Image (cartoon, rainbow, N blue to C red; front, side, top):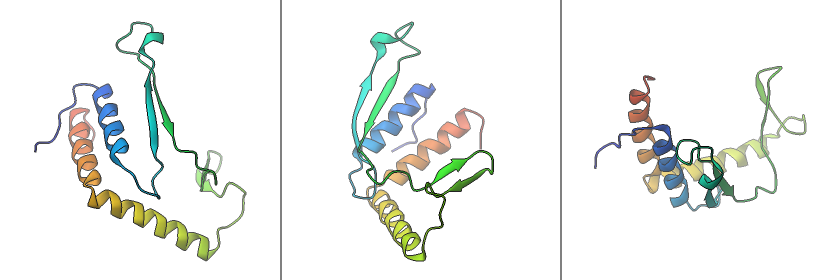
Length: 122
């Protein structure tokens, strides 16, 4: 299986959507649906809006970006406890392990490498 070559950014986005659509794990936000709103674009081809409907994350974001300090911060401006950090890291590791087992990371990194070469970034 060769590394895919993307002609344009839209193909790259579609591949990302396909990878995310294949993932089903309790520690990964589930993609419910993708809506192609090409009927509302100016030319119908190059500026087709895509909307991704994702699973509701009831506990909210775990970190917010603060542009003033250029750091991620707790949404409630408090420090996480050691137990909270341990649980977050376990959940992230479980999600990444699942991606590894399903080859999602291999597909993702292979296509990212090819796209980076195609767009001149490395």
